[in-house]
Length: 69
Image: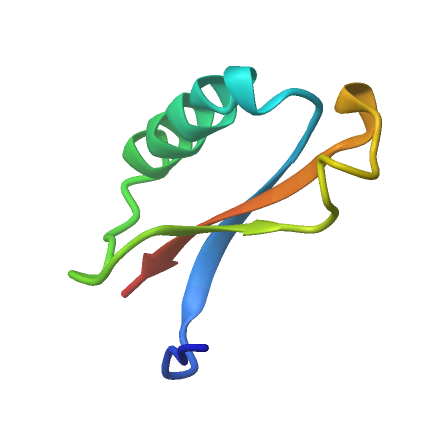
């Protein structure tokens, strides 16, 4: 387990194959640049909402977070 101090973050929800995670990551970074948001100097991260062993590929859910200043 790990923890992150309370912070604001840009969150993007992705549904589908892990092979396509580059698309929401690219969209998140593009949005941050377009809105001129500032990222914190800490790690971005993903949260996997279900297990690929028990879930159809099309139903996989991944949340992507970019911590912001």
